View 1 (cartoon, helix red, strand yellow):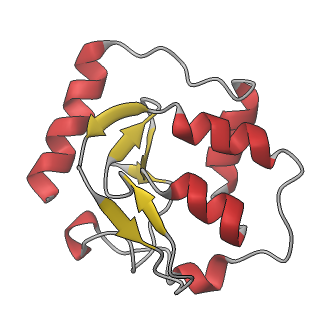
View 2 (cartoon, rainbow, N blue to C red):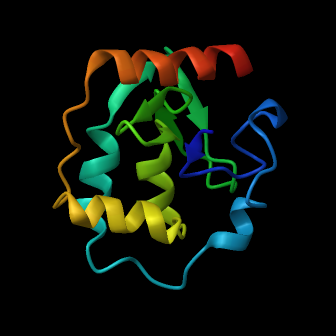
Length: 128
């Protein structure tokens, strides 16, 4: 089963299962104290599915994110290429288990074997 860090109804197709809800329901009042490390981690994720172009901010800021529809992974969790933007611009709250993993790896994405990443990529392609 895929663990999707940013599984919000506005960002993922219903084929990926029941979302956590609307991204609007997961906006925090302030940034994480370690926001820079968190965004560094999600930006460094292993690329599973690349998409050229940009995605528009679903919260209506008018900003766009290059490669926002891409999908990345750390070998356990997956997320969209625009997750860093939602963390930085809107202080979106991430799953506790995902944050614990990020902090446990000291903000450095772990090296994963190619076969594990290919299996995750296959599962994603089936659902796209």
